[in-house]
Length: 161
Image (cartoon, rainbow, N blue to C red; front, side, top):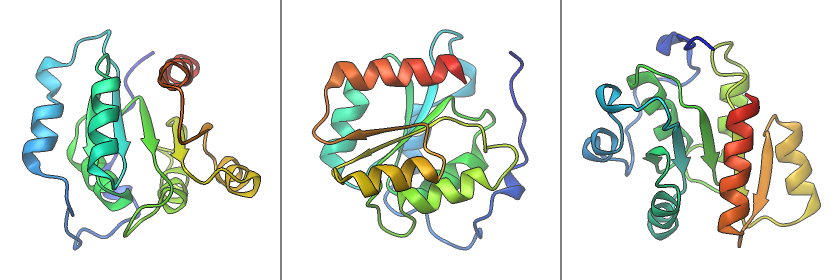
C-alpha cells in the first residue's frame, strides 16, 4: 500500500500553543525517517503520566514510538513528521486536549481520519468505552491491561488499516 501524504497545515489546531512536556530530543531520538525500517511500524503514544509512557515505550520496543504528553503535542508532532504514523495509542484523560478531543481532530481531517486509534484508559465504565468507540476509536483497552493483549491489538489494528 502506498504511503499516504498529508498536508500538516490542514490539522485543526492552532500553531501558537507550546509543545508541553514533549521535547525535541524525545521526538528526534524516537523517530528518524532515514532509519525507518520497513518492518517497524510507527506509532504515537499519548499519556500524561511519565512512568506509564516510559513503561509502554519499553513494552512496544518492536515499534518506532514517538511519545506525546497530550493531544496538542500529538497534533504538533503530526505537523512535523514526514510520514503519518501507523497507529495512535492514547490515554483519554489528558491535559490541554484529551483523547476524545484528539479523536475529533483526527476524524475531521481527510488525511488522518482513517488512522487507527486505540484508547487506553482507566475509565472502565461502559459509557466511557461506548463514547470512545462512537467518536471513532478503533479499539479501547482498560487499565490495567494485559501487555500481550495490547501488543496483539496494536498489530491487528495496523494490519487491517
